[in-house]
Length: 89
Image (cartoon, rainbow, N blue to C red):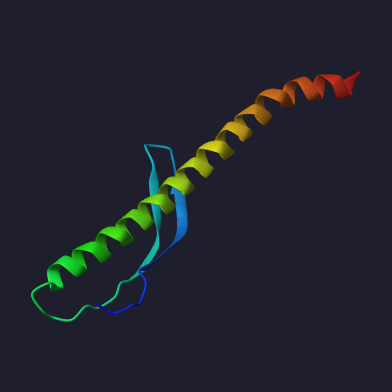
């Protein structure tokens, strides 16, 4: 098997949580191309599985960042009326 590493990148163009989580973007995956012998399927499966795990971690990170951002925005919205009343005094 080649020594090339599995590489995955995901560039999000949209993250939407209006009706569940929707992630849209561009995925690029590079996996080593193993020799075409009796272990070809085993090597490809291992590389594809590793790429899938890397992609899953990226998507989880994006989902958690989105959730954190929504919590912060909600807190800011709740504090705005209080801040406006204080500024009027």
